[in-house]
Image 1 (cartoon, rainbow, N blue to C red):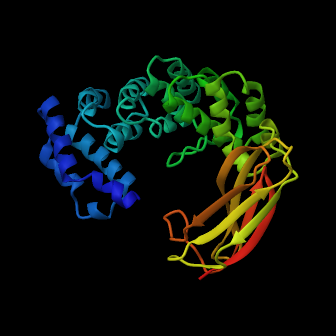
Image 2 (cartoon, one colour):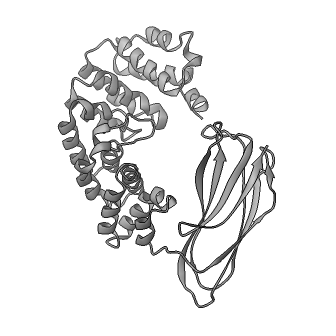
Length: 357
């Protein structure tokens, strides 16, 4: 994935960035910038390394004090969004750590076009109270991008980002931010709050379950956030998470039919499931399948996939699934015996083994 994304930082982008810098600051050294970003190692650099090299080249080619450089980059940044905008926040991360107030103002601007969630994290390390205060202010902003940054930038386990070890150990200082945002009207912010709580649940499951119980039923938005936040604990069949949604062991029969017992990269796992049981029973069901993938060491590593969230009303239910075994960047498949389990409300109702070759 990254090998494709990094190609967004190509010569066309670099020339456009240089032209805009020159427009807003006539002393910008375009030749130096292009030379420093098109060196012999450029093709080998991955996405984050390319962004960092661009930051260094910008600093060298502007040749300005940090605060003055920011005044040039502010108008330039409005021409770029998404991944291209990473460059401006990265500049703050690299060169702005000694000037937090200028950096906070810059990130507040840059995040509206891209994101500042990675760049803010070193500030948490050097200025924990100052940065936390800023995040709480952003959580109250009218700007949805700043509200999202307040949650996303303070996530203890942000993917691609520096872990915030202090908040992994004790996340309670972050809870007022999440409390402020728990009924936010913007899905962009809601997803961040849910992901933030999911991060916390990996180290402090009981704390997140306490929050979920206290928030549950207050607001439709909050209920969505809670359910998304508890996805990890629900997949782990945590008893309190299951109980919150009324998911209990049920007198249902689950029949698993294996269409094939041998799979490969060209032949996916194919199986069918039938649920049957009492006609008079009405209950919530959470149906999942769990695959134990054979690791290189020989051990099994389980991954849970959701099939259905429904209400059982006495009608027989049937499901059919195909699961690919093509290698992914996140998972390589190894030959040997694998394990399939059918999970109903967190309990295994049927299982079978199959071989990957």
